[in-house]
Figure (cartoon, one colour):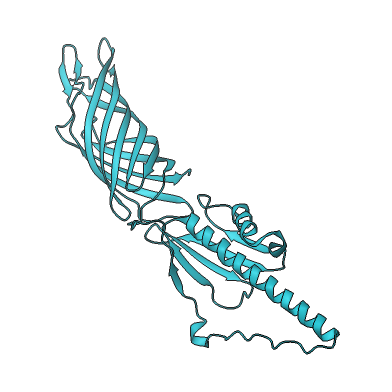
Length: 307
């Protein structure tokens, strides 16, 4: 048997499928010359689609869909194993018929397998259930992954700022948790003084976020973010540094529009309210910056699954 198994990394491997076929059909049947081509890809609803050709590579493929890639691998193994067993049975009958012919006995009439009309030979789509529950395009098993994003923030820092971050997530079905870290490079907070002095503000944050897949490709999320603010004065007689804390809850949504070879771009929009802030104050000048009472954050990132 020659198997061409094309599937994303999160699906079972070609070796897994061959092992399953051998376990069902036996090593003798699995050793027969049979060309099998199976291709698994993502569907628009975050499910999986299998196109399977067994033996004849000219006819339209058989198509199966499921929200669990392992189920499609099991389906492939079962279909191929049954085909191999059928071929082995036909070869055995042919061998017996030849032996009877050589012995002078008339061979039994060959069984005729009715062929479907041409209109029924076209590709059909079968839905393979992943479990006893209806999945709304969400994972039915534990899954985890990593990713990175770039964010733009208005209201947390003295002016429109950008930050870069990395995250890891762990989820099951429609729920998943995410741990992230973000660095916001320095942003100047200018003081109203003749020399144009002020302070540079740097923010480093970590966050824990919980999400629920409310609609296919759309998550509703709540985040708790904590961090450390570092300030450095400039343009004043005695520049100094300062430290402070940052804490804020955020609510938002995340959209994953496409899935491209295991990579999922995502867009996130959030609103946050500072719970613990550090004002930028210069001695002799006064307060030069205070975060907004409600801030806005947009981010663009990409994620991939590890399992």
